[in-house]
Length: 62
Image (tube, rainbow, N blue to C red; front, side):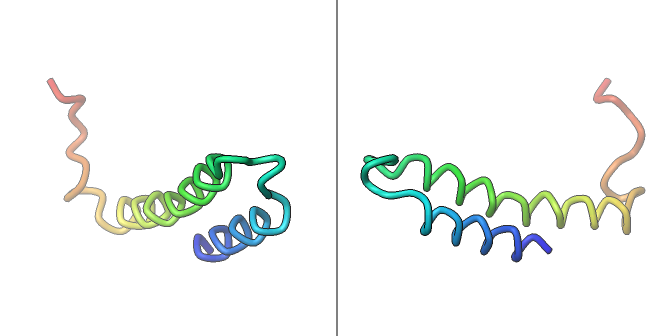
């Protein structure tokens, strides 16, 4: 799922961003980095669901 989001975002950026509307490429970089981050977040939620006692002990850091 995360890979699909990453590929779709990259495809969108390649089609719609160019030197006239993104001269330095910053928008492209930010969007593709955010899409790559989705994979890590997605995996984190899966791991929390599978192994909650090992990753979270119920304390608030006190």
